[in-house]
Every structure is written in C-alpha cells, then in structure tokens.
Amino acid sequence: MRRGNRCSLHHPSRARSSSTSAYRPSGYDIRLSFTEYRMSEPDTHGGSTPVLAARGAMGGVLMGLANLVPGISGGTMLLAAGIYPRFIRAVAEISTFRFRVRSIVLLACVGFGAVAAIVTLAGTVKDLVVYHQWIMYSLFIGLTLGGVPLLWKMVKPADPTVVVASIVGILAMVALVVVHGSGGASDESVSATDGTAAMAMLLLAGVAGGAAMILPGLSGSYLLLVLGQYIVILGAIAAAADAASARDWAAAAVTLKVIVPVGVGVIVGIVGVSNVVKLCLDRFPRATLGFLLGLLLGAVVGLWPFQQPSQAVLQDAGDEVIVAASPTPLRLAGALGLAGLGLAASMAVSRLGGEAEGPDGR
Image (cartoon, rainbow, N blue to C red; front, side, top):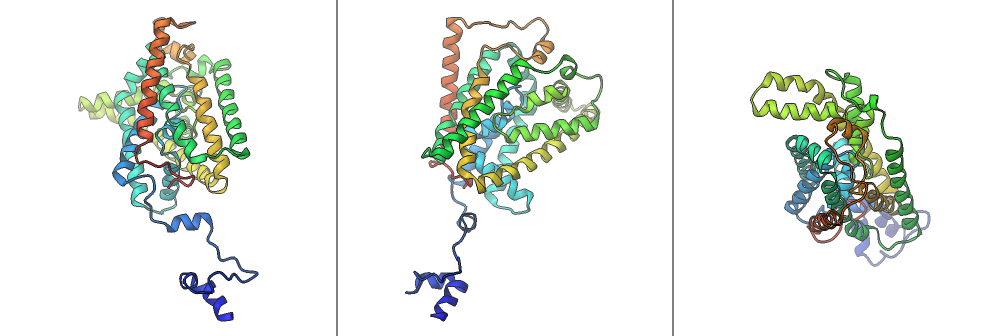
C-alpha cells in the first residue's frame, strides 16, 4: 500500500493506469489545478492558426478604427471579434517571456491590423465621425452586438454570478455614458495645443489609451480628449503618413516627438492591464466574463447614432456639423440597415473557427 502511495504521488502517469489509481491517500491532493491542466494541453483551441490569424487581423482593424472614434472602445471590438480572452492571455504570456507560436501570431496580426487602420484611416475616420456620425455609430452598434452570441457561448449557463456581474457591467457602461454626456471635457482640456505637447503628458496619454484599448467599454479616444491630446496625436499620425508618402523624412522625424512617447505609453498600458485582466479570468472566470458581457451590452447605450457630438468634435469642425435632434424616417431606416450590416459582419468574424474559446482564452 505504501508503494502504491508513492507511485500515485511521484508517477501520476503510471498511477492512472494501475489498478490502484482510484485510491487517494488522505492528507494529499495530487489533482492538477485548472490552469496547470489547461497549460498541459496542446494549444489547438479556437481554430487553426490561419483562422486565428484572420480573426486577429479583423479584430485589430476593428480595434484600430474604434480607437480613432471618441466614445468607441477598442476592447469592445476585440470582444466582438471573439478573440478578447486569447488576446489578453497572449499579451500576458509575452510580457512574462513565455512564447507560444499561436500567441505571437495573434499579437502580430492584431497589432498589424490596428496600426494599419490607424495610420491609413486616421484622417478619414475623423472626418466621418465629424460629418457623418450617424453612419459610423450605426455600423459600430451592429459590430458590437455581433460579439454577444460568442461571449454568451463562453459564459452560459447564466448562474447568479454571471447575472449579477452582467448587471454590474451594464450599469458601469451606462454610468460612463452619463458622465461622458453630462460632464464632457472643458474647452481648455480638449483643445489642440500649440507645438508639441510635453513628453510626460504624451506618455500619460499613451498609458491611458493603451489601458482603454484593453478594457471593454472604455474609449481611449475619449480619454485623449479629456487629456487634451486627441487632436495633437491624430494630427501627428496623419502628418507622419503624409510625410512618409511624400518621402519627406525630415518632416516625418518631427512627428516622432509625439508618436514615440505615445507608443511607449500604449505598450505600458496594454501590458499592465492585460496581466490584471488575465488574473481575473484565471481566478474568477465566470464573474469576469459576465462583467465583460454586461460591458458589451451596455456599450450600445453610448452608440446611439443621433446623439450630439462631443464638444471637441464640434470645436474641430466649426459650424459645419448639423446635429440632428431626432432622426428622419429615412435616416432611421438607414441606421437600422447599417447596424444589420455591421451585425452580420461581426457575427461572421466571430464564427470563424467554430467553437467559442473558453474562459482561459484557449
């Protein structure tokens, strides 16, 4: 009997195949933890690597677009694309020097998609939000809701923990919308600065923006508005793209005084928040996923297409923006159609790879 005990403790593989495998000595617990068990499995969940890469690239593009629009959350778009838990875990793994091929592929695809969207569309998206807000917000409503079925598959059945966490998430999003709509940012805080903003402020803006990229429901662009860096940063990105296309490297180098500190801050924010969210997913998976589901549902409240643009957007556009107090029937029908288009696109992306990922992102 003692030999059987030693076998079960020191040779678990042989113990499982022996006739005494059902015996568990009192005082010992040789069961693997959930995390250890999952880490020992092959990393094959979430579809093949090409499928994961496609979902990552699409999620990156959506996140990049969202980070250009005040009030839209990049983290919400990662949820909609169905890669949020895996993205969080991949960032946490890389930051602790644990390298998986699929994690590296996912981060590369998300990063490439986000950077490509931001660099190529910074000026265009800014103009669309200013002059055609109802079109953009209608699309984002559909894109956001398209991620709900996938997240629901990850969290069901709805036990009390999930229900309470979801309600808290919805209320948190509604509170953010109320604060955004009532308080806003002062004219002084959101106006563009003369020359290059101080490096410390740009670094802080990058950290805030990076954290907001990870937290669903929190808009990085809105935080940049509050910090007074939205116009400065988007202007620098657009200027860098124009200078690069014209091969004016001297002009492009000037923009690096803004882009580099912001980029460093973004990396710090993403890594820090990702590790915190990973810890929550590991220790409280159902509560965390329920809270994220609530944030995703509550995000729709802030995306009403016919709301008044933020003060900073109105300031930037001058008198050219027409604020619709109530939608016309034609615009309402158009908004519904655009929302349906976004919903279909988001659900198509979410369904790539078949089954939803588990709470641990695998």
